[in-house]
Length: 172
Image 1: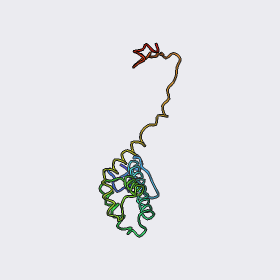
Image 2 (image 1 turned 90 degrees about the horizontal axis):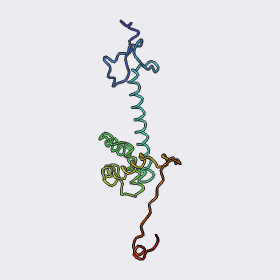
Image 3 (image 1 turned 45 degrees about the vertical axis):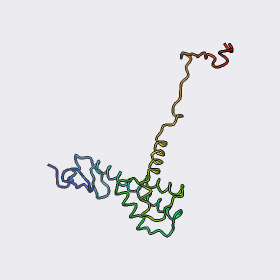
């Protein structure tokens, strides 16, 4: 039986362990200040925080691009409401950044925040995003090298003359 002081409560809101209890004498845990977490809960919490930081950075990038390229009088609450609605639908923030960059570079007619939703659904932009991702993930040919060895078999093909050379008895 563990002592009362050996039992701590996991501070992770989405903890899947029973009663959120951590026995610090036998369970793997992380302690940050006075907060205790199961090791897997802390890893999940850290991963979620990193994802949240990336989303916030992407949203600020979209805001900056909007101000610099479309309109500096945009109502920020409308812009962020539109972006948050799209994120809630499961659309990645990196795709939203791509759509914004695509609209700016191709000088598409984007004038108000709610119009951004229409460009997110355009097949032309979706195809360009897929193409970009394929190019990024493709392995470059320079990663592979062929080893030339002297003991490899060598062969050649004798081409038969075609056309008038064959008829006139050209190169043999």
